[in-house]
Length: 287
Ligand SMILES: NC(=O)c1ccc[n+]([C@@H]2O[C@H](COP(=O)([O-])OP(=O)(O)OC[C@H]3O[C@@H](n4cnc5c(N)ncnc54)[C@H](OP(=O)(O)O)[C@@H]3O)[C@@H](O)[C@H]2O)c1
Image (tube, rainbow, N blue to C red; front, side):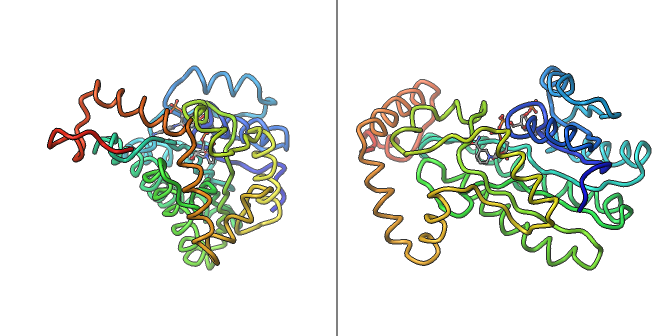
């Protein structure tokens, strides 16, 4: 797909990878509808974009009425849509024992249900464009399930799966699907896991290099785009030799800094009154 002159809707465009995707899109000559819950970050992104009739749509994509509102608004304003980027996402981290039901529901609603439902709402606009594309932002943890990221990994496995299913289903209508799997990237979301960056040997990519890689993949109509680097090898190892990945991750979990992180997280959960089975009978968790 030639990107210049195309119209894109990007969710989560106020910060991090979404902001970089929006700014990069405007540099490539695209017109963008920026979506996010907070006005201020959307405005900050907007201010950095080349002027070209971009739109700011404030709203929570987990709310059905908001998704329908975005569809109706874009139908009136643009009449069609070339690219939908499902980028908005939550990146929760921490032991499962310290996770509440509400947090689990929130991550699945935001990372899995919203992209599916928003894509469905946008189908009439995407079909009207003739040739169009949906980009689903996943993660390398959608291939490599990680401890302390159980809910997140599960959500991104789902995003990878739904991307393949959607690609097969929507191909006859001229709608392509690109699954993007960045590795750890320097954003507000990664700040929350800063204590784990070194012991888990994460390399933090710059969001702008992630964004240009994704747009390049869209320009080339690719089915998927993964981060460069050793993570690609791990993705392959996870599929072919998962025991090797088990061993490498077990070693990381024994790191003193991870154990210190777990101790602090359990203390914080106790003060939030999060009850987990290991404490329910008065015993402290081993971790
Ligand atoms: N950072 C990483 O290490 C990393 C690595 C791989 C993949 N990813 C993926 O990249 C995507 C972006 O993450 P990021 O790191 O850029 O995080 P981020 O800086 O926290 O950005 C997430 C954006 O999504 C928006 N958002 C969240 N919930 C929303 C909702 N319900 N409705 C509308 N907008 C919502 C937030 O804005 P508001 O709060 O204003 O709504 C925010 O601008 C996510 O899908 C994430 O899983 C991130």
